[in-house]
Image (cartoon, rainbow, N blue to C red; front, top):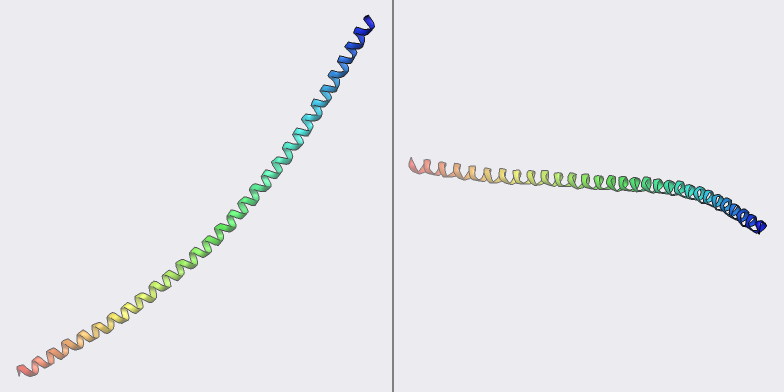
Length: 108
């Protein structure tokens, strides 16, 4: 009987050793997996930041081009308005001169 108890206790000790070894191995594997996942996450973040910066650069370039185009159109519209206003002003001045000249002649 004593021999059976000693075998059972010896088997329990061996089982504890195997369980401890398995736990250590599991902890090592988990640690490696955590390291790999951290590396993958860091790479994904870097790629995401690079993509966002590229998209932002494109948006800035497009925005600047649209602004430049709008400013050019504004300048062109202003120039056209000024030219039209100048022609209208000249016509009014000529009409006033003609009226004054005609009134002066009639009044004399």
